Amino acid sequence: MRKQSARLEGLGTTIFARMSALALQTSSVNLGQGFPDTDGPDRIVEAAVEALRGGRNQYAPGAGVPELRRAVAEHQRRFYGMDLDPDTQVAATTGATEAIAAALLGLVEPGDEVIVLEPYYDSYVAVIQMVGAVRRPVTLRAPDFRLPLDELRAAVTPRTTAILLNSPHNPTGTVLTRDELDAVAAVARAHDLVVISDEVYEHLTFDVEHIPIATLPGMAERTLTISSGGKTFSFTGWKVGWACGPAQLVESLLKAKQFMTFTSGAPLQPAIAEALALGDDFYEAFLAGMRSRRDQLCTGLAEIGFDVMVPDGTYFATTDIRPLGFTDGLEFCLALPERAGVVAVPHQVFHDDVEAGRPLVRWAFCKRPDVIDEALDRLSVLG
Image (cartoon, rainbow, N blue to C red; front, side, top):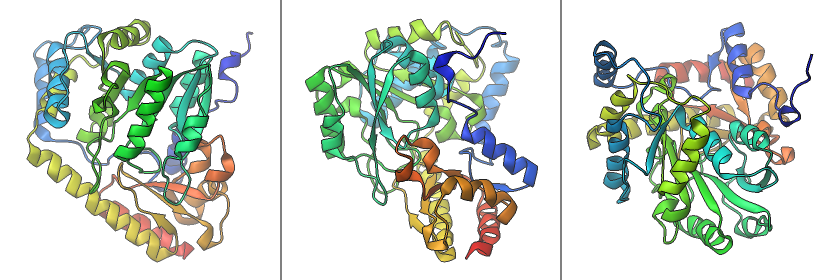
């Protein structure tokens, strides 16, 4: 029997699968995995049903159905003033995760170095490793999680070919400022780097502006922007994502993607196209609801005794567990379901620098207010 590929050594099972399994086993409130517990707009569900019943159940084009590609292009124009050709500069993917994987597979060679903001979403590490590339982490450190610009510049070597950017940032909730993005852009231009920008939380920023790095001078021609319908429209199980940018970068992504899923979600893509065209009232109400839940969770965690780092974006809050007498986030999270009937996720699994994340824990607030209240009530035994 063949042994596992060396490129998969050390990957193990994703923390989200482990913690969600614990939630089921212990009947815990799951504030670990970032999925809403309510569905998105009924009219978008009905649009999917209409597509299912209307015969749109066979393979979609590899680049995505035309109406989704047009809707993505219009969304980028509407919100950010970007001008994209939907036929050559937009591609649909099986969620943002596949878009990131296909981008790295299509644009990065074995031995290349990729700069990534740490802590990082765990699929980044897996795909960089599968590609045979080397990650060069730049650490966002508690409590403010700002981008250390000198460390960013120092991370570049002659083998660096790409920056994998994430803003709004999971798990910290940081939204990169214009000055920080200008610094990233300056590094990319100076060293002729491609930027793969994961912006799935683009519509979840609280009183700060989300700025796509592709809108900065000299960046449109070197940036692939990635997003999805899962986070914004609360259809995470549909796995409809997209990438947009210069035609040659999108073409490279598609060359890899064609041998991954090739295509998926044929009846779901037109529904997400309709979702992207929803009015400002939807986006405003969505953001207001998440802001209320953020404040509900963060206030409650602080009252229990956690040191809470209130996020500027995403639907995750981070706490330092040391004020309650705990020091190791992984040990804390593994014991929490039995101790309190709640599941959270430790930061340290998203770090190369484990010590930087050891006392930190991520909590999801994309849940109903009554679920958040129940979780806080259970967690009160820790205070």
